[in-house]
Amino acid sequence: MSSSRRSLSALPESGIPKAEDFHFGLVVSAWNDDITGSMAEAARDTLLHYGVMPDNIIRIEVPGAYELPMGARILAGREKLDAIICIGCVIRGETAHNEYINNAVAQGLMQFSLMSGIPAIFGVLTPNDHQQALDRAGGQHGNKGVEAALTALRMADLKKKNKEKTPIGFGQNPA
Image 1 (cartoon, one colour):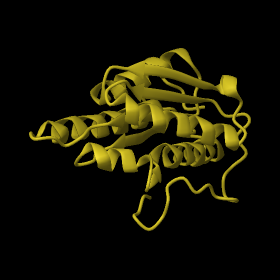
Image 2 (cartoon, helix red, strand yellow):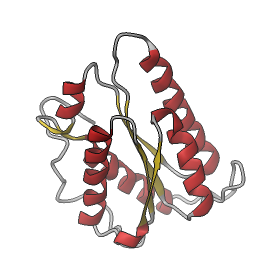
Image 3 (cartoon, helix red, strand yellow):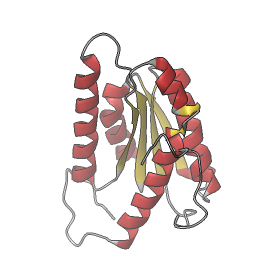
Image 4 (cartoon, one colour):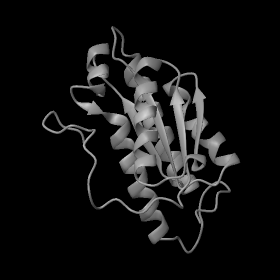
């Protein structure tokens, strides 16, 4: 969980599962690419730091944050993944568009996770302005991409340790 008192880039020394056998998806929004590119790089570097093999990280790009849920579904349809990290940035601006986009993305990713059995990590910044986004994408508050990757590692491990007896969803087997 992010906080102004704790850098998001601090990597825990313990409590992170062994990750060499995990496979991760990385869906990255091209909109605000100066922010999302930094976050995606930090997420990838974090996964590698904890032993994920480079070939076990599959990245695709979508036009904007709104398309993240569909990007997750596309990626899940072509790869066997333990978790999918969705990276985006929706800056508030002068209209309420951010509220509609952020809500739709959050709902879409939650629905995807529940239906597919694949954790979809909400790595979407929702700042008031560009500077706040920079501060959370490698600036004074660390990098939210690190936090998203740590969440993906923990959720992949949780899923592995707690296999469902009866698969549910739209055709995905949460094995």
